[in-house]
Length: 184
Image (cartoon, rainbow, N blue to C red; front, side):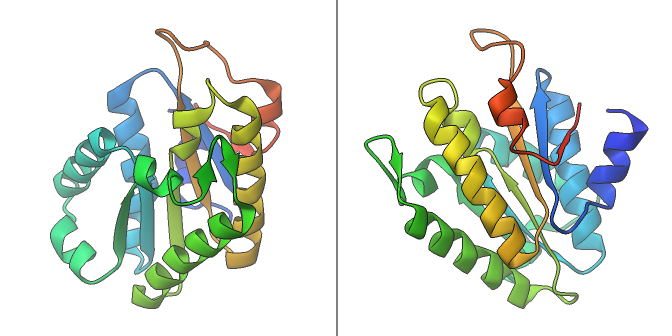
């Protein structure tokens, strides 16, 4: 990642919606770790909405940079949710229930905020990565809803999309336009 991307991840705009399209799993974990760890070190909290596979890798990376993941989770400063199960709480037959999404995410963000010492919460999510290929319309709607949640709760959001392999090499413009900044 370039210096500009690192600066954005370390000092994100509180209403920023950042997208990280990636092809390298190691770089993915490092980027998420930088975004989350820099906020946690300042006394903030973090909400991670990710696949179980990525959760293990990111938590391992957080441990490697000196953060006690178990303690942060126990204190409520690090909230980890599984992307697949969380999607199932507000998306039915490929359609997102807007109110359920905003209520669910709002509760999770405010719970994390209550545990922080400085009121800051950073959010990472990869629910969009799970649905963008089979359901681009729902993905765009989810990104639009995230923009509403970001504004309402004053949190920066980093989301990631895997590229390559059986997936397209670039994100469609319609998805890129939902973000304030593309990293990579």
